[in-house]
Length: 208
Image (cartoon, rainbow, N blue to C red; front, side, top):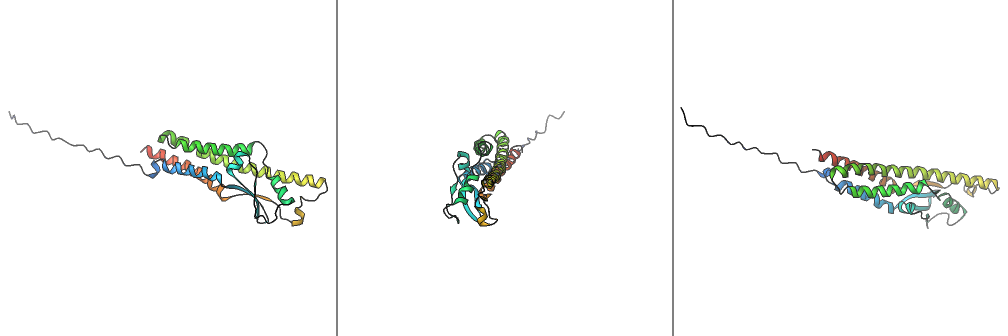
């Protein structure tokens, strides 16, 4: 009987090194996107224009706090009846407009805080808050436009009943005040949607 037994070969198993998470797998992209969206509230979100001239501007934070419009000192028309009537039309009604802009800001802050939590909770929460914040901003825009147009219409009817003409706009032909939303507003909407996308990519990266 052969007592010589072959030495058992020791096999070394090498576990593949776990790949380092890419940029999308970290909290940095979503945190930056949320921060950008929040900081943009300090810039003008809406403008009241008339004949290519800016009569007044208002930041996202001013809307949230219920502050008045900031009159543009470079206005072509100066301080006159047209500007007064335009600013009066810009007074948003109590209710949805202010609530929506506050909701957008609060959700953005919550989303930023959630990005510092775990990939799973922060990812899901970030997706929800990012989308909801952008949706609240869009709802704010639609509600503000509706209120502005309704206010102009009501003023026109009131002046017509009093025989006072067309708010003084008849002197300017077809030029009438219009509500416009700034580039900063649209970038804020995109920033929150981008933050939601980055949170989704972070969740996907954590599953690999």
